Amino acid sequence: LPGTLELTGLPGRLVMRGERGPDGQPPSLRCAAPQPLLIVQDGEVVLEDLMLWQTSLRHGVDAEALHVAGFKAAVSCRRVALRSHSDCGVCVSAGRLQLTDCAIQDCGGGGLVLFR
Image (cartoon, rainbow, N blue to C red; front, side, top):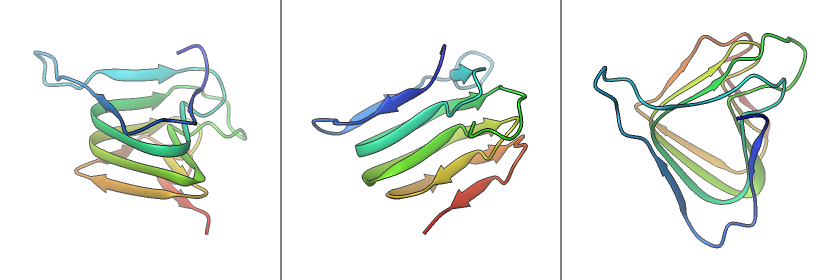
């Protein structure tokens, strides 16, 4: 992706599901810009069998793989790899996050950051 994918104003549930390739690896969404890869402001989002990979090497910026940012956001991740070279894998500043069989790896900051 050239920049951030921001989800807001969703009319219903959004499911993003990947299919593992012959090598057993999930498809990946990548972003090299020094900003979050995926921001969920509101709505229900389900992520399955994906890799969210923020590849920016610039430290000192908010460049997490996933940011749950809105009080009305509900994100469910199943078998998702969350990676960020320069920041945390996941930031939850508001809303709800459910992780099932997920990996938070290769993070330059904390793996999971919660602000409450």
